[in-house]
Length: 337
Image 1 (cartoon, rainbow, N blue to C red):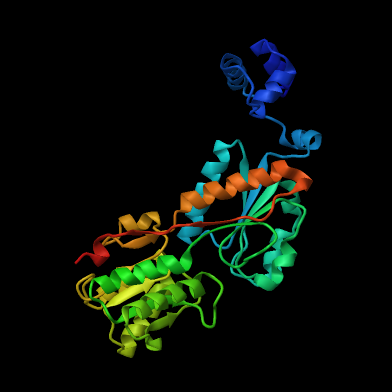
Image 2 (image 1 turned 90 degrees about the vertical axis):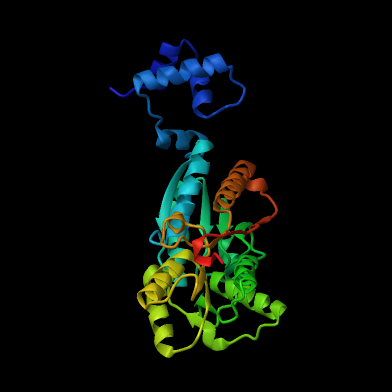
């Protein structure tokens, strides 16, 4: 037979209401009582029936994180940070991967039946633009991540992409590099990570009085190691001279850096590299990769906290807010003088 609240209450010597308050993290519980109930739960192996709880309270204790691609290390690490922050608040996280499809498939995930099973949604927008902001006015509490929606109907938590890329480019300029590649652009993109990071790159060149050279802007399809490697092979074959690379994410930098070294060039003596995202792998590459830390843990913590506030507010709602993290340069071996 399954263990019930009644069984836990009996073993702990408290009421069923007290057990329920402990499970739902009600703040006004004496520490000794809370400890006694938690010990009874552990002893009996009690597991809350989330479906039944949801029917009673209208809440499931679960939120969803919608992200583009778990193969991208940034999103994998973001998911880990979100789960850590959510678990500290007693929440479960359901992860949905939308891939790099079109706008319709992305909306199908957001508006799909599984999203009706959670209390709130964290959504890293990929294909939607400002003109689609009205589509995000949904009944489920929602907090946006990423760069695609501005002045939308709900909270937006993201990094300062242009500022981060400008810091990266300024760093290479400070080392005396003048032929700097912008690796990872998306053709004609303005709003979106690639467009914003290209803008930051150009701002740094302009401020330093270094002419912008279109042949040093390298477009790619996606932001994986393979894309960085293939793009670098093509750049080397073109014969365009360069002495530095600002990669728009760490995976691109790692793929391109390997190809440069295979070609017999030294990093950083011949080509200095800097990435973006500060993923864990950058600490262990050869050489270790200089990068931009976008404050991923801060993004996750603010987003989860704001989502909980929206869930608690209910129909009353909260006016849309925006939080931009401050990027930080992390210098490692790939740009050492």
